[in-house]
Image (cartoon, rainbow, N blue to C red; front, side, top):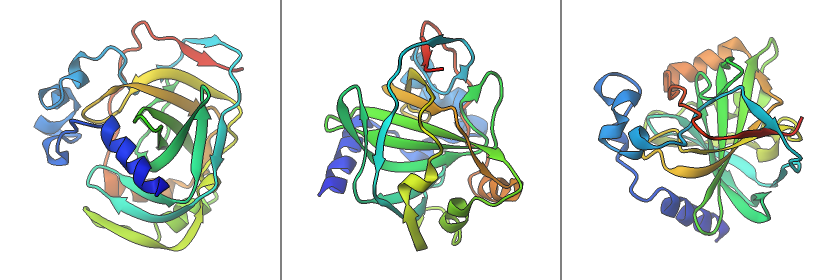
Length: 240
């Protein structure tokens, strides 16, 4: 029942979503043309992703993430690899409970940190009962040792439009690094319809994966990272 409510909330939050076939990352369907299919992509003033560099120290509370469920499948929707999650997976933000709808990946990263991009970025998309969204972003650095969760998740790579069940489901929380320190800002969806009003939390601690794992995912997804957007008048908070 809860998963059904989460899905319904996410549909409300993304009402007016354009068809996936109407946009892409290259040519006449690329990011510079997204405004043709979703006006806010071109006119919005609080768009994501951003380069996190000018920040303000604040007394931010640690993120209260209680992901207790399991990752059970992987979907290739033609734009990204998106994990199927089951069970109770909640994060409390500003006293409001948001529930995890899905997480997905971008290669290379969409957000930058002080000009640095990363080979992979995961977005954990959470929705409250009214359809408001909070995204927890996790960066990945290249390192010698394989990432076991990425290995399990991509053991059978789905074709576009296909969902596969994982041979070995694993805990959602195992996808997260330390969550104590993060950057917070107001932003948008990074794909059409580019809806604003999204609470963004970019974790400072990164996960790791091998260069080969990153390349495998990039071969499937392509370069699915939206270019950096202007910060404009937004303030980025941090809890150093």
